[in-house]
Structures are given as C-alpha cells and as structure tokens.
Length: 137
Image (tube, rainbow, N blue to C red; front, side, top):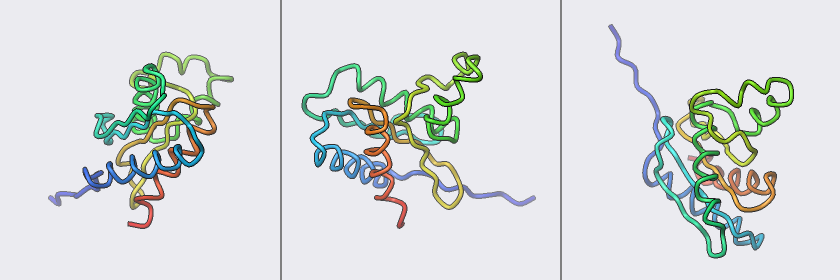
C-alpha cells in the first residue's frame, strides 16, 4: 500500500494571499473584507478593511468556503443558478455569489479566497490578485 501526499495551504501562503488581495482593493479604493480558507472551508485569515460593511465579513467567508468546498470559483455556481435553482440547497455551498476563487496549487484545490464589499466582479478581481501571491510559488 502506498500512502499519498497532498498539498495544503500554509499559514504564510494564506497571509500572502490576504495581503495581495487587500493591496489590490486599497489600490482601487475599495472597502472590502478578504477571507482565506483551507480546503475544508476552515478560516485561516480574515481582514476587514477600513470602511467595509460588517456583513461583508460573513459574505467573504461564505464565498471563500463555497470556492474551496466546491472546487470551483463561486461565479460557477452563481451562473448555474439560472438553469438549476436547486443549487440553493447544496450543502456547504453557502454563498453562491461571484467573488470566491478556488486556490489551486499543483493541480489540487487547497482552499479558497473570498472578497466582499464592492461589485461582485470587482470582488473577484481582488480575490484573483490575491492568488498571484502564491501562483509563482
């Protein structure tokens, strides 16, 4: 029997993603919350920028969890709702709004980053900027 190994998101990588996503938001003058979760949807890092709504913290975590557990960006599920509204009842996929991005390293989903506070495509832009911090590594 062979025991496999798997990639995982480190604490340092989670902080780097958070920092890069927050930097993108600040550069665009967006008041958002950024959340990073592991592959099980467990919160690793959260930052609510000055002026961000308190609700954005809950929404960002939900977007990140949806991306991590579903292994797809949350936009995938948002688009699917038009033809399959039953996805509202999918367990674990708690926030089917654009702005959650799956973190994929070496072909494995190791977590998700979620951003909330501005238009959903802008949230996604900040989340993708966060991924650039680990995509080279």
